[in-house]
Every structure is written in structure tokens, then in C-alpha cells.
Amino acid sequence: ILFILTLILFYINSFAQTGQEYIEQNGVVDSFKVLYPTKMQSKVDKIVATLLSRYHYKRIDLNDSLSSVIYDNYIKTLDFNRMYLLKSDIDRFEKYRYSLDDYLKEGSLSVPFDIFNTFKTRLTERMFFVVDRLEGDFDYSTSELFIHDRENAEWAKSQEEIDNIWRQRLKNDALNKKLAKEEWDKTSETLTKRYQRFHKVILQYVEEDVFQIYMNAFANAIDPHTSYFSPITSENFDISMSLSFEGIGASLMVKDDYTTIARIIPGGPASKSDNLFENDRIVAVGQDEDGEMIDVVGWRIDNVVQKIRGKKGTVVRLAILRADATFDMPTEEVKLIRDKIKLEEQAASSEI
Image (cartoon, rainbow, N blue to C red):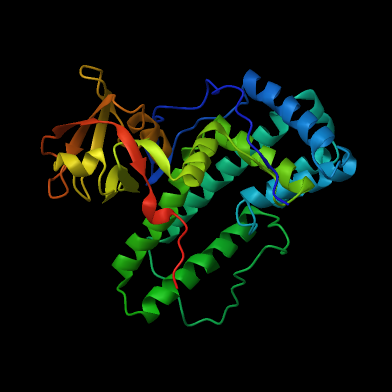
């Protein structure tokens, strides 16, 4: 039985449409932004709690027992391998284990946001350690045991203990590279960028992302096939179900902070224009014939997509840095008229 709760009462004003300001220290980027729940999310919280507790086919009571499952789900979603949060953090959060049911009924979201902000701080601490430790190679002459799966391991009790866990993790990663005959300088660069990419994703989280994680921890506690969809997630789900959307007909990806054209969909406006190609980089997006060009370098890809998608027949303008252009070269403006795009290659098919 599949029960999917798609709740779109309003597009929450706090859902970020612009990039955040970042500051770099010793090779580690941080936004220093603490996320707080919005008033609208508090209202949605209470409505979701009412709908799931009263109308879900399982009819499960929203009580202390369910609260404990929600708590475990939420912590596991954020730090499933127990690589970031410390035991002191978990001990501080433990007092909320049997209170989340009451907070859900009240629409209080301070606890899940406090937990997330703590996780984000610990993640940034780990990045400082990663960048510092990868400045030099490891000693492979000693015998050590690295436990890769820490899902059921004890939480690290101190900064020294979690530093050692991460040292072993990085050493294991580096050893795999060494066995592949890769030089240390290349290994250091590759591993640093690997962890920086994940860190950047978390830094780009906005209030709605945290809210969706928490609501799904609640929904999944009732039934593993029950989900809460944020507005953007719901829109993407509708597209995957209808196999169509209104836009320019291009698949996008993020590469070196640039939203990059991954593929041109045949028959769409991008394909018909003959002026947009794979690996072209989108620097800015403007609406209509004379709308302001908004710089989108460093943005989350779903926020860029929201700027590019739009009603059929409307105009979107893209400032493009060509695939073979250097960063200091001028961009080219590409004007496209949005149309309905059919995702025929994703449709179910049969063959005899």
C-alpha cells in the first residue's frame, strides 16, 4: 500500500531562491547561517500531524512511543554512520526523545532545527580536520583496523576520538588511491574536493530542507511508504509521473560551482535553438525580454532549475559561459521560449 502525502498549502516564503554568502577560512567554506523554522512551517507541521494521526490507514497514535521512533529516524537521517555528532550532543538531545509527539501537535520545530544546526557545526569541524590532515601523507607501516560501517557503533566521546576515526577513514581512502598507483598530491586534491562537495551541499540547505527531513522522519515512523513532499519535491514528483514539464529542455548538473548543461533533450527549445550545448555553463538567468539577469554561480541546482522553468510561451534568458571558455572570458546571452517538454525516454515500455 502506497500512501504519499503531498501537502502544498503555500510556497513557503523562506524557501531560498538566491545563493548564500560564504566565507572561507583555511580552505573550509562556511555560511555561518543558523536556520530557524518559519511560522508557515509551524502551521504545516500541525496540519501534517493531524492528517497522519487521524486519517492514515494505520491509525497510529501520536504518543511517546512514536516520538522515540521519530527521534531515531531523524538522527539516523542526519548522521547514519555516526561520523559527525558526539556523544555529548546525543546526550543533550536525548531529553527530547519522548517529547516530539507533543511538539508536533503544538507546531513547535525548535528541537529538530537545533539538532540540525548542531550537526552542521560538527560537519564544518570535520572539514577543518580533513583539510588539515590531507596536507601530508599517512604512515602505512602500522597495523590498524578501520570499521567502515559505524551505524551501530558507539558515539565518539571526545574530539580526539572522532579525530582518530576520521584519520582512519581518510587513511583508508588514501590507501585505496595508493593501491591504484595514484600520486599523493593527486590523492590529496581528490579527497579534499570529495568532502568539500558534500559539505557544500549541507551548507546550501535552507529551512524547507530541514523541515522536509523532519516531516519524513515522522511519516516514515508511521509507515515506510509514507512521505512528506516539500513544494519543489512535489513538483519534481509530478514531472516524473506525467513525464512532462514546461521549460527549455535541458538536463543540468553542478560542476565547479557552475550549473552546467549535462544533456540537451531532443525537440525542446534548447535543441531547436542550436545555440546551447553540452558542458556550457549557466552564469546568470533573466526573465522575459528585459528582466534583470540574476547571477546563479554557486546556487543549488534546484533553485537554478526553478528560475529556468516556467509557463509555456514565456521567455527566459541565459548568460552562458561556453564549455571551452576560460573563467575570465565574456558570456553569451541565449534567449529561449519555454515549451512543453516530453520525457519520452523515461516512459515505461515493453518489448517482445
